[in-house]
Image 1: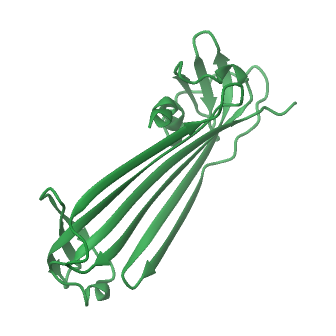
Image 2 (image 1 turned 30 degrees about the vertical axis):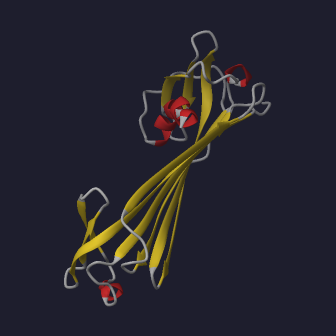
Amino acid sequence: MKSLKVWSGFAVLASGVALQACAAKQPLPAPPPPTVSVSQSQTPQGGEMQQTITATAVVKKIDQKTRMVTLKGSDGQTKTIHVSEEVKNLPQVKRGDLVTIAYYESIAWELRKRGTTTPSVDAAADASRNPAGQMPGAVAGAAVNVVAKITKIDKTTGEVTLKGPKGKTVQVKVKDTSRLENVKVGDLVDITYTEAMAISVERATKQ
């Protein structure tokens, strides 16, 4: 996930880390406030939860020689970061440009009866970035799939104990205990966790 690592500095802004704002040389476009979108769905044998967080910052200052970029968030706070040499399109970025970060994550689970599969774990990752000469942009994502065995069920508290392929156990809480009526010890749960991050830079508008 090279692109995700390259742009990790920009992602700091979305996590709420900030420094005291500096005085602006001229008015900058005000970035929109962060947005959070959450959705979930259920099926008789499983379900899925998804969340997307989008944050935008404006480029307040940029030094092409030192590759230091100061970003200003919608709350007026600033953060100065160093952009890696791996980012070839930094010369395209100017003061007033908008940097948008979208972070997506989801977790899906499905109940499998014993004998239909075996405990396992698989992972995959992918990344891409815009060609040289274009405005900076990058997309990176990863997915992990784990098949775990149910070793204990407490239908009173809704607590289920899962055992992974390497023998590690974890307890999870099921809010709707009625969904445990047809679940038995020895059944398997297929869980897929996915996360992705997309970063784009938009050209500053003329003022």
